[in-house]
Length: 384
Image (cartoon, rainbow, N blue to C red; front, top):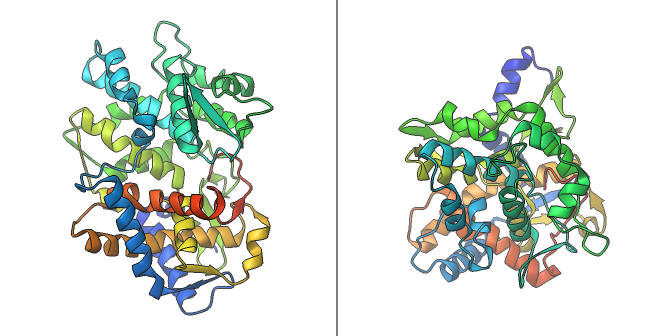
């Protein structure tokens, strides 16, 4: 696909409207029977919505559903770690507290790609795995000052601290060893080191964006512009890095920006806690990761044209994976409406995801495969 004006093209690929439009084209193509990888079974959508609604009501019977956010994982095991952090930050003024919480959120989410089935983190007599384990581990790494170069101010993330990070130091903080392997450890370190080259401090975005209100997409746009150079993927237009954006023969470049949107969802509350109203939440898309995508495969909304494809491993750049993720974005929008109808409530997508699609996808994966996703993805620790 040829672009006459690369900067304009890159800007287009950083819009969630483009994610939705191109994902929608892939869904229409698959529904027409023209996808070489997937078939779509619309008669399974109601069953999928029922599954999500049941999981949502079980977790939130009053439908007071919080945002899909890293802050849910920080409460793993019923431990109120946010109150602990609030106490540590109590002497700081509002903006300084917001910067620290943004620092923690950004680093923790960037460390949140799949951990693999064999890693766990122990906190006292509690053991956490997968996303909860990564969250708790990153919380303690942050409060211990792992990402700060200032020993007098451990509760921050700064460029010098990130650049000084090594695989051995992160492995020690995350309790990684021969019997406790973490998938993509080196990739995670490289990502954070690149973050240290890209900006002085993640929390500085508060000073740039905060007013009485801020659009959710403005937070995402800030992240996509400032973090564009940190991603390990080599996708680029005329030397301008694209990040989580992949070529697909049916649509040209398919932008997805999963981690950047996950950061954005997770920053909604730190901005709101600082008194800033966040608007336009539904401009963000559903997250194209293996829990939401797995939900669609496990409920039969999507089916592989060749079931044997579950027996091999794939990379994020493979056309099947790119298309699976695009179909996930498009179908989550449709599924969200059906879930809300079943619940009898109008909820933002951020709450449907939390209630929700991610939790239902994880529950089905646990029932069917001991928690493993339906497709095996060779992760570098920065996409899935």
